Image (cartoon, rainbow, N blue to C red):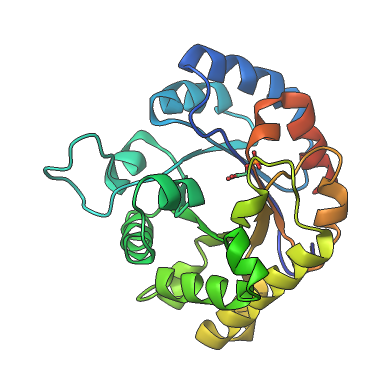
Length: 255
Ligand code: 13P
């Protein structure tokens, strides 16, 4: 973290977990534990949990996010949710381009770009996920992959809109596997993403962009990862479903 330049953001990605009642209970447990956070705290929850999460977080320092949105404003897209719908219910954040969407649901760099632009046009803050597969890391093309993903995802995004973009570097091989990138690996790739942003938007914009790490971040390894200068927070899956663990990560970002 470099707190002189950027306020860290710790975001939970609950994925397909928790009913509305369970969401409310988890947030109630989290609230006192993260109340004095010196970072932004976000919980990204399944669509059906959004009303319960907004109600439970009202008046607290926890913000709510969705886990995806469609690129169209409305139309014949059965089961999809649009960015204006999320805006209308009062959700400030949305994750776009998570590797599980890319792996299991046919998400491409182009649709990630379309969704990103739609979310930004609706005034949402985007947590944009990029990250390489294990074989890509082994081939030594990690930087090329994340630069390619970042450039396509941000195509047509203005410098003004970039202020509402957080980038989450999530190496696919580290997600849900218990295998974390080392702090050095995380910092190296985050720095490469920042250099890419600098090429696209200039150094000041790059310095202001929050770049998280995600992939088996937990209560034990968070402090070391967050101590890296280019790691400005975390996108946390499994550990965000346990209030004590999540709060330890929030505290590690608050020092
Ligand atoms: P885990 O923290 O469970 O590895 O998940 C990371 C992730 O995918 C967050 O979006």
